[in-house]
Amino acid sequence: MNKKHHLVVFSGGSAANNLVDVFGKVADDKGCSLSYIIPISDNGGSSSELIRVFGGPGIGDVRSRLVRLIPEDPSSPETIAIKTFFNHRLLASPTEARNEWLDIVESRHPLWQSITSEKRELIRCFLNTINLEIVKRARPSSVFNFQSASVGNLFLTGARLFTGSFESAIYLLGAITGVPSNVNVIPAINSNFSHHISAGLQDGTIITGQNAISHPSAPSSSPVIPSSSSSSHTSTEPSSPETQQQRRKLSRELTDHDLVDDANLPGSLPTLRKQYITFQKTHTEDLASRIERIWYINPYGQEIRPNANPKVLETLRGAGVVVYSIGSLYTSILPCLVLKGVGEAIAGEEGI
Image (cartoon, rainbow, N blue to C red; front, side, top):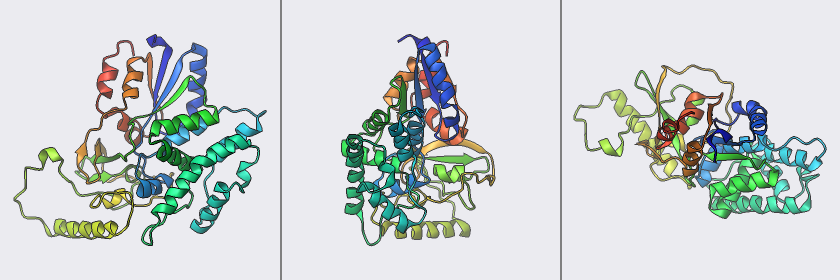
């Protein structure tokens, strides 16, 4: 592929949606392909409940971009209906949301109007898959909370569980909704597992989870846990009373969470296993200090460096232009750039 005929955009979900039409027009005018590289570290909103019950990647940003890419066609009632369908969120009351979900799964909901029967049954196939899994995993200590759940997120999760492939789920949603063939939505990491990030502040505080970084509340820090490469170095200094109290609190939280039957490993950090269904995206409380570094962690809080999706590296090697889009630098752009191989792929391409 000619390098000058490929446009690559690093972005998150919401903010860059305002520029989708601009990027699309540039790609059309230049006759080039367009690829969006999207992080999968989102653990807020309805994604948090899907991660708690099923594990898997944070799909909210990917779903947001795919739905935004659905062509605007006022002359096609079905296109409008499909876009409305995958943009829809269930009601804010958990009980009413569950009833609304059943209406959707059983084809009684008004959202199905103007969607042809063949597409309706294809979509329902994957909604029924996720619904069956929700019922199978229900326990007295843990039931799925449908509150404000995104129908698009539920569809993508059902498709991922059905096919065993996150990228196949993305392809299915793009094909059903008519996303242009020259536009690709590529997850930064191709995985069926959750990947979380931490932020290190200049004052030494560590904040765990994208939601806590983007929407901080006090206290939002987690204890510093050494990586596997440094675990052999054990401190002999006595712990302060405050540190001992934090450890006892963490131990109680871990025990409480281990009593819940969900998709997370026993002993994993409680902050990665919580519901963050309700939060204000406009929340502007400042962090205690500036962010110094972003990195990925395993479920126990240890630092890891995952490999980038091979498609990301292949796309970057064929890029003529790379755009770092508007949005959150620390929770949208950097989670893509710190992946293994991304920096080398960008630096190795002359003329970008």
